[in-house]
Image (tube, rainbow, N blue to C red; front, side):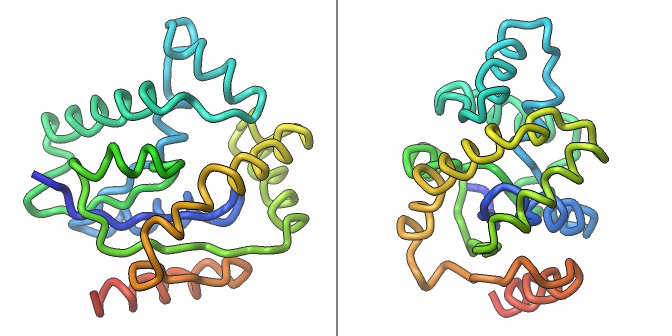
Length: 193
């Protein structure tokens, strides 16, 4: 069964997590941020150590490991009754991270809309990420060289998803707006879906 899905795509710091958390609080929407899944890993395990090695350098975790963790997490959510695929929409943030992951996930998810949170002002995003690093104790957001590596990774790996999913499925939203304005745009698009 392919799961009904909305994707949040944008550069690091564009507000994907903020919007995903709000949407996930609405009944029949289940938010899954792949970064949160990774950050919740026990860093003493092999998987946790591998994640830290990649994220501390601003690199993406390999596709196979990412998809495996995603599948396990989704299966656990279903088993615990926190996600009912026949009723709920997934709101994915941080996965797929590249076209290869999108191709692999195609057998698992049916993407209904891709919300592209656009913010060409990278300095604004860097400032957001620094604040987030302090507020949420996210070490992967604290160093400028790691932040810049994540932007380069986004441009090379993730941004091509917009072309992969195609213009009719993409809703581009100015992520510099207040979060409630971005949310209103997303909800309006979902309602007309």
